[in-house]
Amino acid sequence: MKSHLKMGGCWSLPLFLLLGLANATPALALEEQGNRAKNIILFIGDGVDAHQLTIARAYLYGQDGSLSFDQFDHQASARVRTVSDDDGTTPVYVPDSASTGSAIASGIVTSRGRIGTTAKTDRDVPTILEIAQAAGRRTGVVSTASITDATPAVFMAHTSVRFCQGPRDMDGTSAGLPGCPKDTRAEGGSGSIAEQIARAQVDVLLGGGTRYLSQRGEDGEIVLEQMTKGGYQLVKSAKELAAFTPNGRQRLLGLFGNSTLPTEWAGERGRFAEEVKLSEEGPIYPEPITCQPNPLFGKRPTLVEMTKKAIATLAHDGDRSEGFFLMVESASIDKQAHAMNPCGQIGETLALSDSVKVAMKFAQSEKDTLIIVTSDHGHAPQLIPYPSLFVAFAPDNPIPMYPPGRVALLEPAAGGVMAISYGTNAKYLEEHTGTAIPVFAQGPGAAAVKGLINQSDLFSIMKAALADQ
Ligand SMILES: [Zn+2]
Image (cartoon, rainbow, N blue to C red; front, side, top):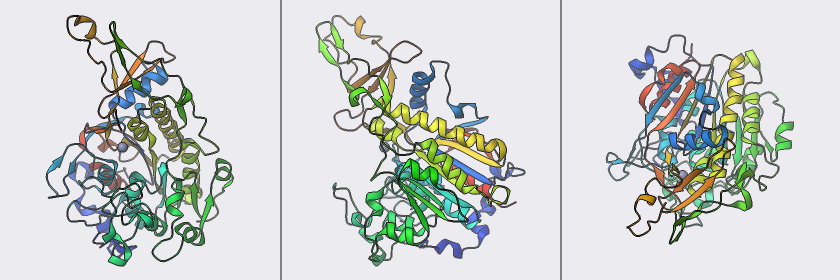
C-alpha cells in the first residue's frame, strides 16, 4: 500500500473534503433537506441475495413469511461491480467480500482481496467510518467473524491483501494464502489489519479474532495489550458483555473466539448437505436435516446481544450523544453457504433479522437514525424442485445425476419439503455468485435507496446522511 492515509493522515484534509459535500450526486443532493442522520446503523448479511433470503423466509415463516427488514419502505437492487487488479478496469463478474465491502465502505470499484485500496494503483481510500469519526461521531463494528476479516476490516483498515489479518501474516499465512510484505510499516505501509484496528480508535469492537490480536506487532508489542493499555475494556463472554456499562468515552473490545464465531444453529449431529445417490429407480435423496441450536455455540453473546450492547454503548449519552456510525455483520451466512450447511446459514439469517429489530426499536425513539440492511455479494445455494420436474419424464435416458453436487432436504414447520442445492463447487467449497444484491433502508436519507443502484452508491448515501446540519 502506498499510504497517503497513514494513521490519522486523512484528518489533515479539510472536513468538507472528507464529507465530499461538493460532489454529492444530484439524486442524493435533492434528498438531503431534512435527511441528515444523527446515527447510521449499517447491517451487512454476508453472502445474502434474494435466493438466500427466500430460503430463510420460507423455512422460518412459510411461503408468506417475511423478515424484519422486509417492511422497510425503501428498497433497491444494487449492482455489484469488481475489476481486475491487472489493469484496474477489466470487469470481473464475481466478487469477494473485500472488493464489495470496499465498495460499500469507501464507494470504490476495486479488485478482489483489497481492503479499502484501489485496484492496480493501490491507493488508500477513506472509509465511511473514518469520515464519521472525523465528523465527531462515535463508531462501532460488530461481526460474527474475526474483526480482522474482510467485511469489518474494510471500515477500519487499508491493505492490498485481505489475508494480512495479523502481523505474522504479512509474508503469507500459515495456510499458504498470500501476504502483503510491502504493506509493513517498515516498508512505509500501515501494517497488518490487526495493528491498524488497534490504532483506529473505534469505540466499540465486538466479534472474534483473538488469534490475530494476540500477535506481536512490528513495534514489538502484543496488539491486544496495546489496545487494553490504550483504554479498551476487554470482555470475553456474554456475561462480561452484559456487565459492561458505558463509562464516559471508555472503549469496548469484545473478543469471543479465536476466529469466526460458531453459528447459532446447526443441523442435527452436525449434518450438512450430502450427495444424492443413484439407483435403478432414480435419485435417492439424503434424509431431511433437522435444524437445532448449535451445541458448540458456548457462552458467547448472540448477534442480537452484541447489537444491543453496541447501540447502548454508542448512544449512552442520550440526547447529548454526538451520534454514531455502527456496522453490524452477520458473517456466517456466507461462510456456512460455502460449507453447504443450510441450518447454519438460516440461523445466521434469523440472527440478522432479529438484530435489525433491535435497531428498529432504537429508531422508534431516535428517529434521526438511518438503518441500511444489505449484502456484499450473492451465493451458491438454490431452492430447487423436489422431486425433479423432469427426471420422471426422461425414462429412456440414462438416470441423470440430479441434483449434481450436494443437496439438503429441510422440513419447515409450515409443511412441505425444501430442497437446497449446492452445485458450484461441491467437492470443496461452494462459490460466490455475481448477482445483484438487495438493499433495505429506513430513516433520514433512506429515500435514495430505490430502483437499481450501484453498491458503491451506499457509501454516497451514508456520506450525504452524515453531513452536518
Ligand atoms: Zn465467501
